[in-house]
Amino acid sequence: MKSIPRVDKYMTTSPHTIGLDQPLVHAHAIMSKYAIRHLPVLNGGKLVGVLTDRDLHLVETLKDVNPNEVTVEDAMSGNPYTVAPDAPLDEVAAAMAEHKYGSAVVMDNQHVVGVLTTVDIARALSEILRARFHSP
Image 1: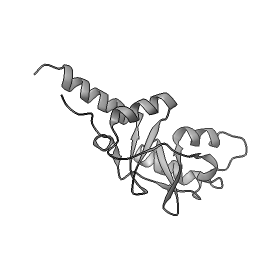
Image 2: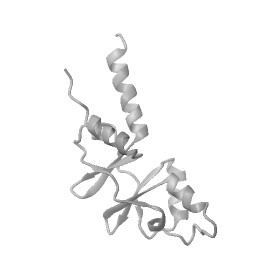
Image 3: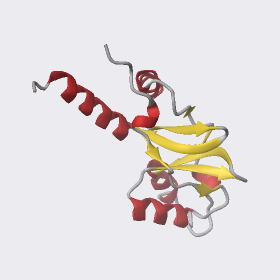
Image 4: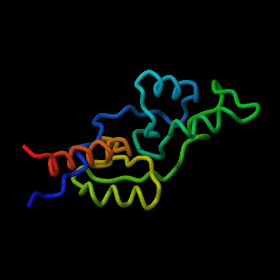
């Protein structure tokens, strides 16, 4: 019997991050340019939150919000869900489903080394199902 895959097999490695004090317009540009939906937020190299495309959209649609002036800190979600690279994928997927998290920030020695999103988990499920149920 095979062992459960680890998070590091399916995570996005070396993810883009953004500083706490950056304007929303900068975050929007990064997300658009790289077609990503989750940005770990750092303050002095330390993880302090996650900014999602949904967070951006919500704040940017508020009346009198100027994305050139409002900072990432004002739109991010604090206390992000974090996991280690060697965490079992099934446990992380179960926690993400239970709490309705869109992503897990993968941390190693207090450094962001990856992001695992629901899209990554869907790809993992697809790969595992194909391997198990397709005949050779």
